[in-house]
Image (cartoon, rainbow, N blue to C red; front, side):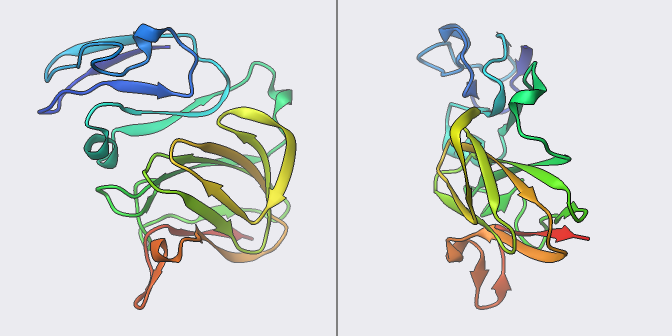
Length: 210
């Protein structure tokens, strides 16, 4: 990978490639592995993307503000041998955050969150990434998660659950077999992150199986 980062902020920054095995000078930690990227300056990161799996990138400088305001994203590294992953028909990425933008899934809070869609019988891969500062136990009604990877690494023993706790910095991969038709609630099970007296808000979406 070769990533050219130009700082258009009014403050210094840097970008960390979370989960990647790279040389120290490309790790993206200002004051430790590189100078800060000052406003108007450009820094070029170059590294071989490895290991494969679900990873992410984010600011590693004034991170509460910068990551909280959206300086983050998924970094998906596909394996050369696709057979190392279980079979799936579609995939979805869910980025969890609860900083300056509020309690969000992919940058939005309910009711602005978009539902996930599947046909009966499809195998849906969900990639969970926690870019926030709190744990988020994600719970899907009606169907279990078949969890097979953590932090990009295949699990020696996959497991099933209906609530998957995702800590800050963690990434989890799970398959859902969409075998139950309907609109199924999908939310963080810290209830204060998902419901109030006025109804659902924040880290809530749905899986619609038709």
